[in-house]
Image 1 (cartoon, rainbow, N blue to C red):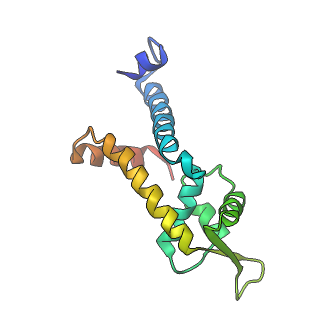
Image 2 (image 1 turned 90 degrees about the horizontal axis):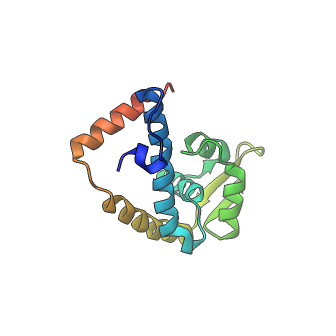
Length: 150
């Protein structure tokens, strides 16, 4: 079903407008699919993103500023997300040894285990939506990368 039918809009001002609406609608759809799979673990997509960032550097600690820079959702408050994950014993916060103003963050063993479980759940969402060929996903990624001006 096309975006027109999904949002009950007959026409768009341009194909570019239609594409932007379609990207937003699709992002919301994917987020809902992922949230439905991980909500039982009381972890948000943004918290999952922080866990993935930390796993990418593990066992090295990561500063809050580095986490902020790497976040998919730039509107997220990394400090707040880190604190929520800390209260769940999924991460540890430590004062940086060479810069006392900087806080370093690293995964706990429990955080690594949680990340493995969540990744499996999210992999199921991805596998449920493998409707395109590999080269089509490549083209989609190239087009999305080209759309951004960063």
